[in-house]
Length: 67
Image (cartoon, rainbow, N blue to C red):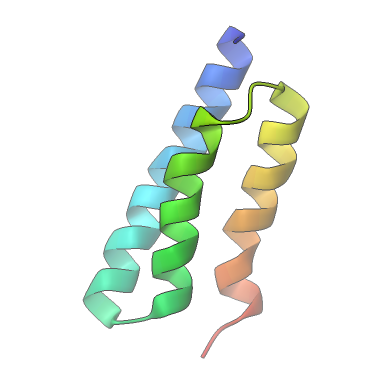
């Protein structure tokens, strides 16, 4: 794991925590599940490019599926 991968993982995990808290307080399942996914996926992917692509995709999911 490179330093860049760790820092991107930290950034997207922080976004995941914020989405998780928002989804829990608003009882909204899409931000809640997106937040959980953003917090967990950096542990399983070590390629920096894929971490960034998946992170941006998962961060965009709550905005695409607004209820």
